[in-house]
Length: 450
Image (cartoon, one colour):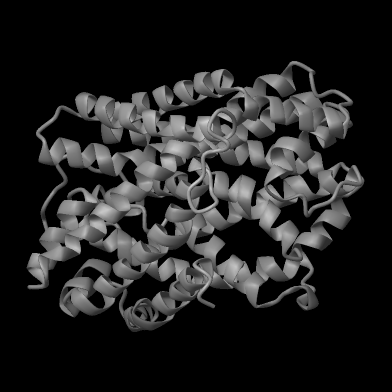
């Protein structure tokens, strides 16, 4: 096993890595995207397919990406270059690292804007503004937010500043300390919200919808959506897991830690569904509301319930915590590259990368208002960046990571890093054949080839 150490220090323990990597994976995809996708695709049957895809597709690639990170002990670009040299492979493999760093940077540029919405809604809910609000008023408030570049500018700026402050403090003083407090807090808030949902009239209906499979509501497209959500919700292909793996001590088991992270990520998605759907059904709302579910539908539901303002504010605080723990992971690869390759102090690297990401995020801010008529290939700036990253760049990155770990990296080196015993053969088969094929289907579906 390599004895090389990261230039940026290491996690203090396996628990620190699990909390940080879980924070990286757990984000808006779990609390915002998973519930509305489950709602649109039939509930229980979709959830079951999603769980199978996490185990069969996501976990093998997550193990591979963590392993490559620890083996290389550098930012994703330098890691892929050094590992290609170790395997006597083409140095062009370092472009896989570039793809991950750029993907994470672009995702954070719009992620920050949406996370800013959640910050604003904490105050809107807590102020009582949503008390007994009508659907028309909830829709109007959300539309006013989207149409106001000034308001979005302010909250986007606040969120990016908070993210870069945490990252500037380093691995132990920033990333580890933040996730050590935020992740337990996130789970506590989820449990409180689930307890709140338990007392609602729609609890049994919500649980039945979420966990009782009705396979008549599943088709090929739903399976591909579940597969894509399983892959993306784990945060794969964007350099975050690779850079966090580079900070992992040698004595920590990669496979066991990764399974813990994937389990935590999946548990949060399910707990979010348990919190959301009973409230939706109790208020006779539709679970198929799509992306507007948490910003338009849930405020209506919380507004009609006793204590709804307090629990609504708690919910959006939960969304914010999930978003910022992912945000610090998304920008860390770029910061590490600037520190390693441009000899910048960490604070300077944070300033440059943060300002660049903030400027890029203004494109998303303006997409909903002053640039709403500016389109490329029928998509505004936000829609184009979202499509390119989620549907093209991340799947390609995931396939390349799986291919390199399974076919290019020497078997003795991957066995040395993973120390999985007899389970190694199952992982190797999955990362060589099952995971790349499944992700390729998602990629081809996204670009309308199948």
